[in-house]
Structure formats: C-alpha cells, structure tokens
Image (spheres, one colour):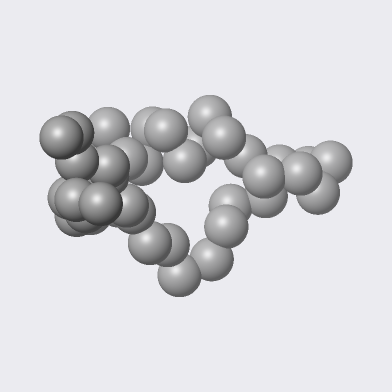
Length: 41
C-alpha cells in the first residue's frame, strides 16, 4: 500500500487576487521549506 504525504503550513500564501498561490507552495515544498510526513492508511 502506498503512503500519502501530508504537509502542514502555518499560513497559506495568497496571490494578489486573494487566491491560494500554488506556484509559491510548490516552490517552497521543493526547496524544503515545507516539511512533509508519510501517512499510511
């Protein structure tokens, strides 16, 4: 069974439009700024 990865952030980064900034989230995750943990169901 494959494990899922869960990442917790203190605050969601928002773009100028007020929407979640997914590009910044992905960049922070790749750079290791957002740690993730494996969760097996």
